[in-house]
Image (cartoon, rainbow, N blue to C red):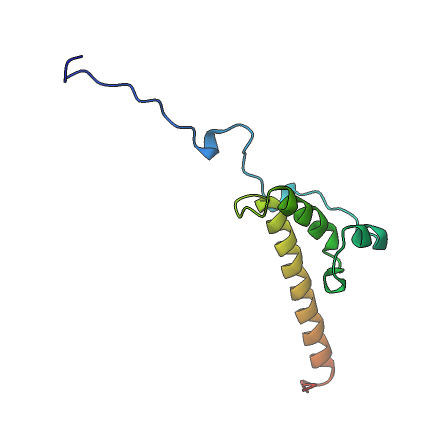
Length: 109
């Protein structure tokens, strides 16, 4: 082989070019009904985590267990759960602001 010949190097596939790894958005996630007490008990969720987002935490914990808690796995499930937690936090803040406005701005602490 002469030095002036080009060597063909195979290109690596990137994640964006892989057909099974298409980007999904938050709107792609189908809303699930809230988890029942039996589902939360069977999933061994601590009492502190048994809220309206528990229906998203159960599959997240299952995915984490099955993938040995690898940080790059279960990203969609984690994002859905964290977004749910954020929305719930915003609802609590709005409710507190509403209660504070009803009291004339007086703080409880």
